Image 1 (cartoon, rainbow, N blue to C red):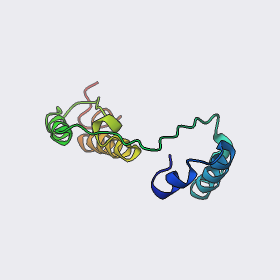
Image 2 (image 1 turned 45 degrees about the vertical axis):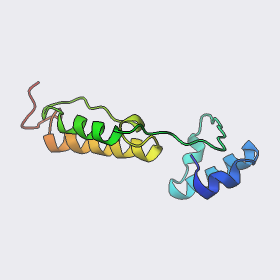
Image 3 (image 1 turned 180 degrees about the vertical axis):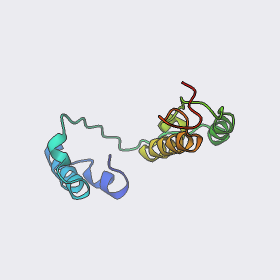
Length: 114
């Protein structure tokens, strides 16, 4: 996913140039990752921005406050934070942190009931 200046610059590029550029950058961060690409899909949104409804943050905070301490199933994803890849990553980290702190569902944990 490309955004900001890069996304604006690349919107008119052909798909092969986009792929080569992104593969090069990915391989710098994760050497060899480009060899694992099975397919790619291109979407070009010149003027697109996900919307976040008013009250979203309050609803998410209420959800997080009301989770049962022993819950082993949590909702995460970009719909549970800001509607971007970063929002999905943050909610994944939050869910993992909650599970680790509660120590639920992990073999040998003191709170494990099954």
